[in-house]
Length: 383
Image 1 (cartoon, rainbow, N blue to C red):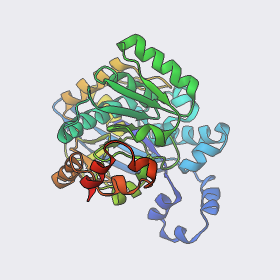
Image 2 (tube, rainbow, N blue to C red):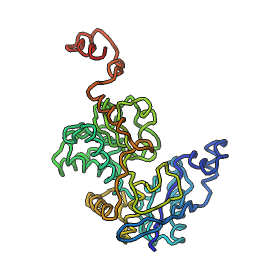
Image 3 (tube, rainbow, N blue to C red):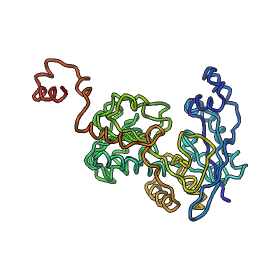
Image 4 (cartoon, rainbow, N blue to C red):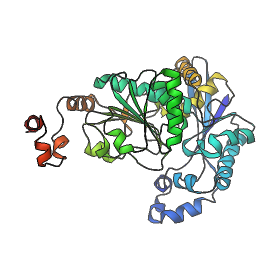
């Protein structure tokens, strides 16, 4: 039977503590320092992934570095740790390897690992893009947002996922804002989109300023923590958070009931599979990046499908077709690891027509504001 592996790592020390509860009593720096020297570990072996065209089995192999270590340690330390995890997977029969979370960034987004390893690797990012945009379209339609009329913002637009999301959205959008830290890369992407689609986009480096006017937000940055706070968001807006760790603060779900927050990239896997590992999902669901590796294994495509800093639109379209062929499908709409309820959608939809009192209550009341035409009317609407 065809076998693949997926490389994972703890996002935080809290993930390690789920396996070893006593660790929560130790300083995080101490835990990271010790686990830095730990070998890779096979955390699960699973079967039951079946389509009409075949079946495959898989492995999860864990690299012991946290997100913070992946981002802060020198590449000459991190890359060998990820490579060691890949080689452990190969020794256990893996013919194709998927790079999960921040292991997909190390070594120029998998290119260095692909040159060093005897089997192909993929980041899974092409299918992540496909499912994120599918979820965004579905949720936008439920809220009554039309992509060609809504103000859309992509946070992390110059990353590999963000850039191709932006280019695909530009085919449908009429108002698109690209948000990232480096203005020169933003300018190059904006010029490319103008050349490809004829759409002139906004570019911004200030996340808060960009999101205050956005009806739809696609968050795909590689930040180590939350960069989208409740006060940044417009009432009635939709936010699709594709990033892991999440770009969106948990405060948003608690403090902004007038914002629809969904996760991008969670899919239903065909067959009867038990991953033997808790991702916070019901049985049979997986991240799209994992699913891409499964799809390629089922298809017998032993190739480096999604790799490097640039993703290709034709690859996104191809993996979408292959996913449908093998029975992979978006797992509905989810928000912070739970299914989205119709009640949640309806509450946000209503806020589009009846803004919450805080919409004006948060503004400073002064004479200049009161003298503005129409201000008294606005006050009456909130009373």
